[in-house]
Structure formats: structure tokens, C-alpha cells
Image (cartoon, rainbow, N blue to C red):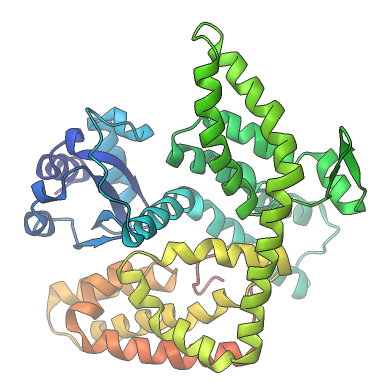
Length: 416
């Protein structure tokens, strides 16, 4: 079945846009938040040609498709254009009583929706950083050469201006003005503010001291800022008449939120980020065997439930605070173990379809995308999955003991 046909079948079985609150995709999954899950026949969707499996986690209905998920997503929004901006048709499903589970699921859905849209670009930029570092070490390039500086700008740009990218996706998740969010983020990483942070120069805002900080490449500050914007935007939209609302509401938001960010939200989130990074580094240094065993052994189990994106901001925060992250390297053995398990199946199976799937999944896993391998090969056969998890745990312990760190965000793969 081609992508267009699969998209149409999915929409039909899910109940059309009338039953969809939101849809987006990550590297391999089409992720839906639904109004009424009971209306959706999971078994029929899993039986579709082109669907590997269906996972329900974090309040999401996740259809695992594979590497062509982006094409299927575009066909879905081509059929229902309103879904491209997260709009819905009709009334949103009634909200039940807030529980810890529902709140946690909402948080995971938010994190996933914020980070997945640009993880591909970030992974590519991270790999480019690694290749440039290798080129300098091998003597192929010098850090002062024009080629290096241009490519380094290409690799570092998305990390330096990360708050702007996060502002756009977070605003989309919270349904606030995305361009106001980006304007606030741009102010946070503007040259003047960055210079103040670098010089540790104290300024004041009408007598209120402003603590200098560098917000480039940070994660938590802008996410908290967009949450604040959510509430203030409701206030200012009600305050102004619709004839001037499109201009005056953004003006008020910028006038209020940027100073509030630099005075209150930014310093608080920066402090929390620093504490979190310090705690993770301390854990890795004090009990590296345990850290490597747990993260390396259970990483692919976390991937099964689709909640692995929740750790992405933690890793990125570590890089922003410490310059390196000790978690990412631990994931590499877990990823390569799945690739090795798929390769073993490829070499031993006599089933032509399984051999073809195992071969393609091995290549995909080597480049950091393990879902097709897990759902299509190792988990289905069980033993390869268990052995891969054991190998990942052993490899994770070795990496943790070595103290290896990553200085840029990238998919754990042979290229990183």
C-alpha cells in the first residue's frame, strides 16, 4: 500500500479529524491524541500493510510505520489540512478528573511534541559537529580554515539558537502565538543579553536587579516562559478589543514577559537546570556501574513505550550546563545491540520476508533508529530482544565506567 492509501485508511479507521485532537510524527511513529479511543479498532490498524505495530503510551495512540512516516504524515495532512496546525474539528473531548497518571501523560505528550519536530535536524547537526572534530584531529581541516568555520556555523546554529526552535514547537503544543514566543526567545539570545551574561555585568530594570545569564542552547527557561505566556496571553486577548488585539496583545506580552523572564523565570530555571545537571553527573561519577546498567539495559524497553523523548531535554540540559552529557554515550551499546541482534536474525533465518526485513532493519538501527528493528524483528522473536538488552546493559556499564561524554546532541549511532 502506498503512503496516500495508508493515510486514507488510517483516517477512516481512526474516525477522521472529528476524533483527532492532534497528530504529529517522530522518526518512525505517527502520534495521535484522540478524543475517543474506544472508537478506534487497534487490531485493524495493526493489520494494515505498512503499519509495523501500534503502541499506546503517554496518552498517545502511536502508529509505528518506519522510516517513511514523514511521507504518510504529509498525506494525512493533505487529506485533512487543518491537522497540520494541530487544529481540531468540533469540540475537544471532555476532560476527566486530573490524576497523577493523566498529568504525567500530558507532560510526556508535551515533551514529545516539543522535541520530535526538529530532532532530525538536530541529529544531523550533532553528527556534523562530530565529523568536524574528527577532521581537525586527523589534520584534514584546521579550526581557522574557512571551510571549518562555515561548516561549524551550520552545525552549531541550531544549538546556539535552540530556545527559538523550542519556542516555536512549545507554543504550538500550548496553542499560543508562536511568533510572539519566538520573539521572546530571540530577545533571550540577542547579542546584548548574551554579552551581559558573558561579562557577568549586573544591570537593573527600574531598580530591580537583573541576574546575568547566557540563554543560548538552554532548554528549560524558554519552556517555562511559554507556559507563562499561555496564561498572560489569555488575559491580554480579553483585555483588548478585536480591532487592535493582533497588535496590542503581542506588544503587551513582549513588554511584560521579556523583563519577567530575565528577572525571575530565567534565573530560577537556570538554577534548576544546574541542579539537575549536577545530580546526573554525580550519579554517573559515584555509581557509574548502576547508571550504565540501568540506562543501557532498559533503554530499548523505554523506546517500546515511546517515552524515551522525555529524557532528551535532560541530555540537552547536561550539554548546556556542563558542555558534555554522560547519558548519550551509554545509549550507544543499547542501539548497536539491537542492530547486532537483527543482523544475527538476517544471517540465520531462512524466511525470505524476515531476512529482507532484518537486513533493512539492521541498517536503520546502525543509524540510530531502532523501532523497526524492535517491533519488526527482535521483540517479535523475543530472545533476540532479551539478549540485546543484556548486551546493552554490559556495554552501558563499560561506557559509564570509562566516563565517556557527548559534546553535542545526536542520535546514538555509528556516526556519532
